[in-house]
Image 1 (cartoon, helix red, strand yellow):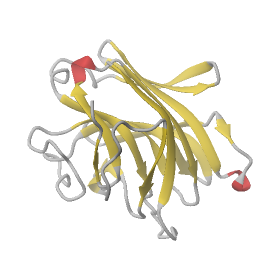
Image 2: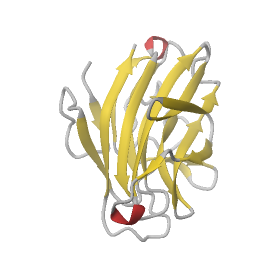
Image 3: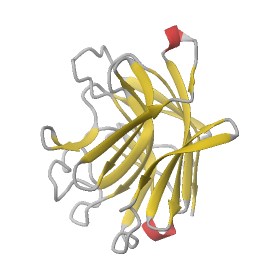
Image 4: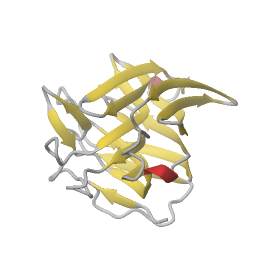
Length: 214
């Protein structure tokens, strides 16, 4: 199954290498909120599959952060039937914006967290402590491994620390009847929302061992 991309200047290599990187310009994001509208401007590399065939996915993430809301991770998205390839230009309202769940590293209050955001209608955000922060680059190099698993109707989200893993979120609507025959994207994303206009350039996020099981 080939990989595709949106909001990137170059197509991804096929097959993806074991390690690869993705870069996000300032003011890029994946979000949906009454105060901010529907935003789908971040780069995404993804595979397309039927939601019913999805079993699990895993990904290791490394990023060097500088600004609030810098982020990167794993995403499962359900494009609207009216907009099968959502991008920065065409996914700006409720009818064209996909449903999605994203999980990865995100910076908030000057610290790295494991972030999960689920958008059925508007974005529902939660944070959990990160399992590992390296001491290099003044402590701003962050590493984490995220896993998605289908359990009955729900998407279960785990963070792994060595041989141990802990569940940090259960999103119940993802595999309900009506969702299962939808086309889904499973992939990686990175964002630099740059809410305060502090970023001096793009954010580069490094990914490793992106695995999808059907």
